Amino acid sequence: MGKKSGDRFGDLLRVEPGDKVDLVHFDYAETFGREKAAGQADLASNLVKLSDLQERLYAESKHAVLIVLQGIDAAGKDGTIRVIAGAFNPQGTPVTSFKEPTPEELAHDFLWRVHAAVPGKGEIGIFNRSHYEQVLIVRVHNLEPQQVWYRHYRQIRDWEQMLTEEGVTILKFFLAIDKDTQRQRFQDRVDDPTKRWKFSSTDMPERKLWDQYTAAFEDMLVETSTHFAPWYVVPSDRNWLRELAVSEIVLDALDALNPQYPAAAPGVEGLKVV
Image 1 (spheres, helix red, strand yellow):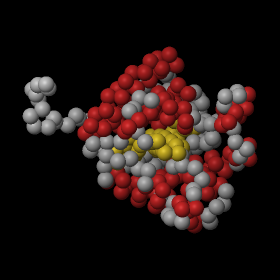
Image 2 (tube, helix red, strand yellow):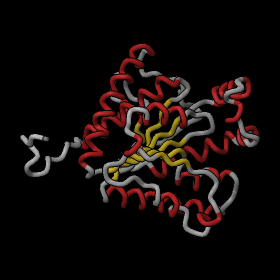
Image 3 (cartoon, one colour):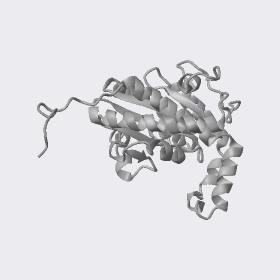
C-alpha cells in the first residue's frame, strides 16, 4: 500500500501478506497523481477492453473470476457494480448480494450459501458483500464468541485457496471512505426523494460503531490477504478514482488469463450457408 504514483493500481493498492493496515491514517481521497478528466477517459477505454475480454472468457469457458466488494455502508459497492458490470454481458456475469441469512442458510456452515454463488467456468461473478460479513458484522455485534469468528479467518483462507486451485481468480476490493464522506452520502440520500429508499433505520446506529468496524476491517485485511487472493484497498471518497482503480485491476487480471476464442467445429470454416 502507498507506493509511487504512476504505478499500476494493482501494485499501489494490494495488501501483501505481512503488511500492516492503518485505516485511521489512510488517505481516502488519494488520487496517485491521476486527474479526473484523464481518469474518466482511461475508465472508458478500460470498459471497452473489459467487454472484449469478458466475451472471450465466456466463449473459452476455462476460467472463472470472482470479484468481491466489501466496504462500510455508502462506500460505493452498488455504484462500482453498475459501472464494471455494465461492460459485461449479463448472461455471463452473475451478481450476488448477501443479506441477513435465512433460517435454511443458518442451518448450514457460513460458507454454504457463498459457495453456491461462486461463478462457474466462463463467468465473472460479483459479490456485493460476501463471506467476510462473518468476521465483520458478526464480530462487531458479538453474534459469535471471539474464538469462533477468529477461526473463520483460517477457514476463509483455506476455502479461497481451494477455489484458486480449481481455476477461480479471486479479486477482493475493500472500498475505503472516511466518516465525513459517509455522512455526506447519507445526507444526500435523505435529501433526494429518489434515493431516500436506500436510507435504512439501521444506518445511524451502525454509524456509531465506526471505530469497531474500522478495527474489524483492518484485521480482515491483514488476516486474509494472501498471494493467491489478495485484498486491494481502494480510496473511494472520489467515485471516479474508485471506478478507475477497480476497472484497471480487473482488466490486468483478465489480460493475464489471456482468454481465447475456441476453435470452430470441424467443417465450419468456409461453410456456405444456404
